[in-house]
Amino acid sequence: MSLVCRNLHFAYNGTPILSAVDLEIREGEFRVLLGRNGSGKTTLIYCLAGLLRPQQGTVTIDGLDLAATPRADIAQRVSLVPQEHADIFPFRVLDVVVMGRTATFRFAQRPGPEDYLAAHQVLAELEAEALAERNFNRISGGERRIALLARAILQAQNTLLLDEPTNHLDFNNQYRLLEKIKRLCQEKGTRVVASMHDPNLTARFADTVTMLSQGRVLAGGPINTVMTAQMVGRLYQTPTRRVAMEDGTALFVPCTPGQGSDHREADAPPAARWT
Amino acid sequence: MQPSHPTNATWNPSVRAARLNTGLAIGLVAVLGLSLWTGWVPIAPDELGAIVQAWLGNGAGEEITGKALVFGLVRIPRALLTVLVGMSLSAAGAVYQGLFRNPLVSPDILGVSAGATFGAALGLLIAGSSWLVVQSLAFVFGLAAVGMALLIARVVAVRPMLVLVLAGLVVLSVFNSSITLLKYLSDPYNELPAIVFWMMGSMSRGQWGDLLIAAPIMGASLILIHLMRYKLNILSLGDLQAKSLGLNPALYRLIFIFLSSMVVSVSVAVCGQVCWVGLVMPHIARTMVGPNHEQMLPVAVLSGGIFLLLADTAARSITMAELPISVVTAFIGAPLFAYLLYRNRGSGWS
Image 1 (cartoon, each protein chain N blue to C red):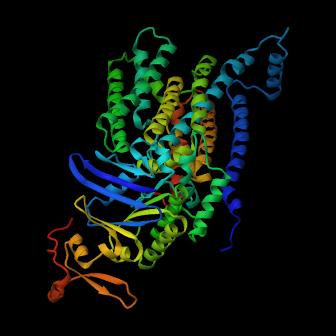
Image 2 (image 1 turned 90 degrees about the horizontal axis):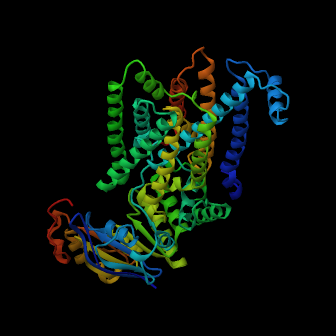
Image 3 (image 1 turned 135 degrees about the vertical axis):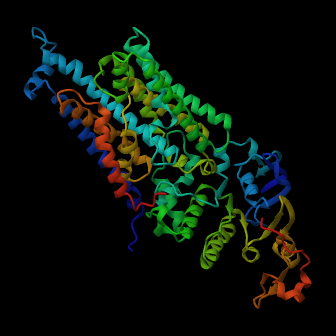
């Protein structure tokens, strides 16, 4: 049972964003998409969610072709936590979470007691029960992420797509959130695909990584084989060192201009411009 | 913080809304009674009893009095029509505010009122056209205006909601200019006052015939909007999230716009333009029961009916000559809106 993406091409108004992307993500796998700004991470996530139609190639989930599957059926397998969430009407957090059940509702159906109970349970599992009655527009960025994660978990536990889940989160919240997501993979077999910016958080939490550069897969595979100083340096076009920690983990640190002699492991030219 | 029992906490808003709705329904009946009783022909309660008795007891031998005629042929249809129009405008306002994710939107945003008013003005200028022609033209042009806005948005085909608002603005301007042109071309002694009076809005033309045509259309649309109201919560998140939650936003948006345009067109056809109801009533409902459309929509609909009926009763009772109803709704609605903005300032509105 896999999420498979074959020879995916996506262009926006003729500008290619993704080219020949191949992916295969198993059940219970935590896959991180790494890449610079504009490398196509968000577009790829939207293609995997069936929100964007690729011009070429297919996305299948457990053998189901997304292009030929009704939206409600996709939504019961794949849920998405979007990157930005514009302020909306000041709904209660519980009302936001229960919206995860939308795909199961018929024409005139509304959430019933069992849906609210399920929403409470998911919030409790995430240790966020206290948020239930709060105004979604008045809670912190970290709390909103948790609320939206709860909504996504209530919606579908097969595949969870996260677009930069750690954005705007403080140091502690980044770790707490990723730990909860990791536990979801391990305990419920949820497949997670998350786009991230931090190679260190990636190396610590992900099982596998796909490096995207200008819409193409630069490298992909298990963390240990792919996350080398050389590859990280190539991806970010910045000479990078790998610093081993006492507990066996490693940190990736960009080489600053003054550290010229430490360039041994990095051979990439520095990035010339913002992207 | 004490842990609350989940089911208890869950059902609080809906229990509160249910109580409120019961109260509003009773209030509506009370206001209906007040409105039927009020007016320049005084009808005392015992006379009312006699009239009703005369009808029920098939009036054998009883003379049908002038008061009975006023009551049965003027006040009852007018009051019922007013309630329906108030409910419809309020529901349409709630729907549009949800769809466009903007609390400042009124049902006019896609040009439905302007289109319907243009249709009515056109009907008034065509010599010898009956009320039915005027009303039919108002209804058709109201729907046509929204259809044009949707068509423009479809042709542009990017950023659906933003383009729809701009397309609505285009249609609105075209029809408003056309109305000005019709006014300019009209005969200033007979036609112009008729057009102006139409635009100010009045329930005074409401008769049983109007009610029999308007009630089924408005009733059916209101029931459908009521049944589908939970979907407004999802649509208010925007297309991307609605899609990823498993809803087809384009389809549901079209259904909602169609239903709202139907009721607003019928409203304008029946009584001309009535402002502020569609803007203010959803706000009052949100203030009372929160933004969840499950609870908020019925509250908005009932309050809309009560509000317009009170406004109409005031319009025909305050002065000897009847006031245009939009004057009354604006005089009450505008300060009320300002107060609500003040009340809700801390709710995290964007």
